[in-house]
Length: 359
Image 1 (cartoon, rainbow, N blue to C red):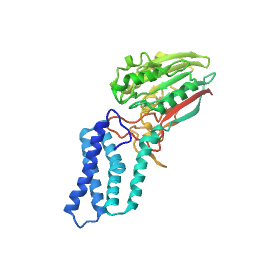
Image 2: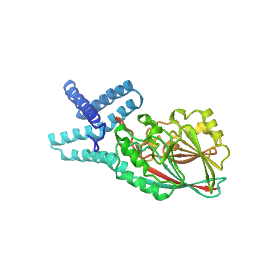
Image 3: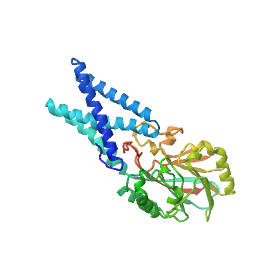
Image 4: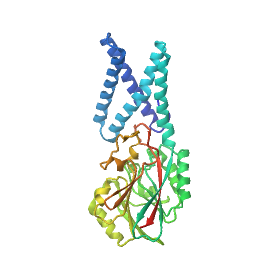
């Protein structure tokens, strides 16, 4: 019932059939118990019952898998189950106009699953940093989190390599399924920068032995570590906080102390929540991902859920200044994995090409 197939496809199809089956069973049972009720009432009760049942399942499972199950319930119900019901009534009652809302919902499903996840946005931005003598160019990618390489990933590679960045920062979440390891590793070898690529871990990276995985790629694994690079622009310090250490202010203090004096210090951490950890410490810019910009957003409202404790306008992606710290949050390139619906709405995948200029 999706416009994609991946390593989780069979499980996801089974869930979609279960959700849709629950919905239609609710309609059948309610229509027998309450034969005099209007059709819309019967359908509304069946939809509510389906949502409640699968939310309870999600709460029982818990964690990101439970959350993904709840998200899948809503997406399947409104973009697959209800269109099927409308098509059924259109044929049974000979009301062809019912095909219109059914097709609109299916078109929205196609847009969210096929079009928007592949509409890459390459965003250029400038940040002013006091102490630099010349500009420093940075390409920032995050949440590759893929089920397989597509044409969009070639666009990403072309944009990043064409920028001829001094540094490439990759702030976590590599892939959704371990079977893709060699394919993605080969892809990451193709990225080129003048002075190095750096990676910090994300939520789904427990699938990999990260030190071994990144050994032969264009990226240095930087969890709990730092690098100091001398450029014509000045001395650039790059610090990395692993996912599990994002709130460890003592550790971050030690990492920054190890760097010593720099002209600018850049912090990499998968979650933007690290901005509170960096408060009062000598870091100029925080690079993060994790939120996918919300992944599913509404016009004029923004992200429905961000899975982050930072302000929604920060989690939605982009560049904000919090106190003396610039916070750069990427909307990422990929989609939540496992049993979550692979969908983006009003939240295009993103590559950030930044220039740090002298202040």
